[in-house]
Image (cartoon, rainbow, N blue to C red; front, side):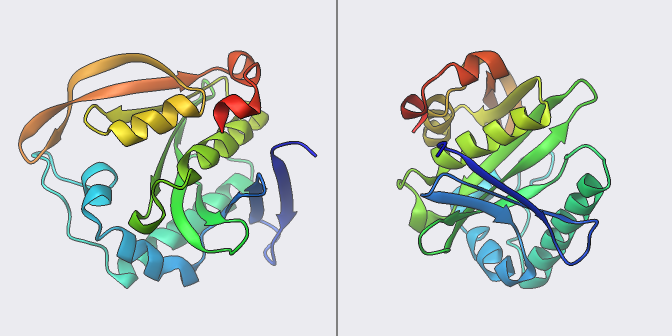
Length: 213
């Protein structure tokens, strides 16, 4: 059995693919409306609002999500999965990160953009109660493997320079720090440096799974 398993079946609507990825410890699956409460609660967390939430041009965060807001986001994810099932690029598709044994929700990862040159940008977050359990690293490994299966020529993510935990996840998952974009972001009126991490299919697959765990 390989360290990454893939299940790709069709849902009730034949235009919507249901993709699940698992390594036996973490499972990635599409979001459902039943997950909206978890998402809304997670986005009340200061760290998620800081590093993953929307903010204005001065770096002021948007209000926390309501259940209705979270349901709308889940619906948008579903529409992006439907577009992917119809043959479009997978920009905007997102997975709920779950504990494989319990099925409990722990976080999110998804593709922010897939360019015409087959460069995929993605991101991730973990809810506060599940941090430190290795979920993020495993999720990034699973997602990256799937991106390369789909034909991505390059996968990358960006991490604000003071987000040491997220940078550590990227490194553990086999990503290379390629540089730092100075004053690239803003938070509460302060300019913030942003680190750039990337992986290429050949060099990434040459790493042993144990190195990425």
